[in-house]
Amino acid sequence: MTETITVVRSHGRRLAKAIRVDGSIEDYGGVRTVDLGEVEIDGLEALEAVLRRLEHRRDCCVVRGGIADPSRVKGVRRLLYHDRESGDEPTLREMPRRWLALDFDGVPRPDWIECADLLGCACVAIATLPDEFRRVRFIVQATAGHGLKPGLRLRLWCWLSRPTTGAELKYWLRSAPVDPSGFGAAQMIYTAAPVFLPGSFDPLSARLDIISGDAEVTVPAPRRLRPPQPRIGHRRDDWGNLDDTEVERLARFVERAAVGNRNSALYWAARRVAEHHNDTERAAALLEAAAVRAGQSAVEGMATIKSGLRHG
Image 1 (cartoon, helix red, strand yellow):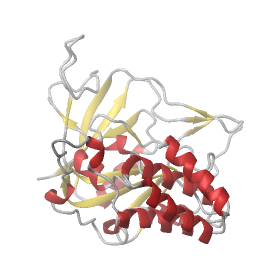
Image 2 (image 1 turned 180 degrees about the horizontal axis):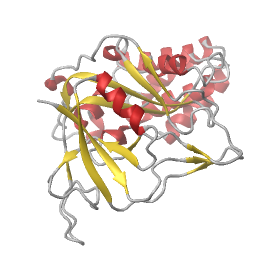
Image 3 (image 1 turned 180 degrees about the vertical axis):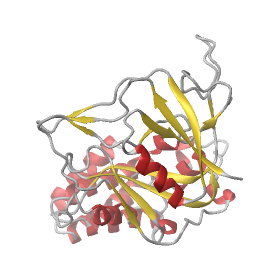
Image 4 (image 1 turned 120 degrees about the horizontal axis):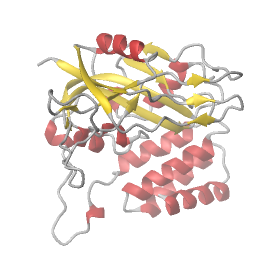
């Protein structure tokens, strides 16, 4: 079956952020109705060609979902379900995809990697993903805040070995520092480069680059990406948690963080623990030890961990 990507086009509304002369960022324009279209792609090279075209289209973006009714694609709302109030019918449907967009927003950037070094920044982001992603080809895209806000602001695009649902992706990548909202069928994935208003400048010479590697990510079997069912008599909190191996991976991430980024990395890891791990006391001890090995004091490290656990 041919793979497609759904392109959304607005009517005179900007689907790109604008950068003011003081470096502040003006958000996307409000969009209610759009046109929908599908572009056929047969691999990452074809996807790259689409993204390079869309980089200059400030009225366009993409979504994961497929078109629900080809006869209703002009001036429609992005609806996944029937709207009872207006009576509008769905225009999008859930669609397993072989292409994948991963949004990283604020992962600490080591001081020794410049924001303009997209490939170096991407390698830091890839190191936080499951092992299946480590040696594959990626399209690296800098989002609007990269170089203007702290941390990594990247989108990594890759090709999967089989069509994968949004639910599978959310479970598979539950421990990775990626934005899961992008796995939703109707969620806009913005593809245009930001608009730099008069007097402002782009800190990056390029916003798209390629990391070479294997052609596709090997996706685990569907049974491995199916969340465990809650057991009778147990709270929902008792399933879908991080195991000790994943906590140790978080600890290694903290330990490898560069000076200046260690506190942010430790806080992020503690929040992940609070959200997905039952034995927070043991996990906190592992993170504290990693922070000390990275050069932080035990007192400072534990204060950051407690803050992350509190807000997770």
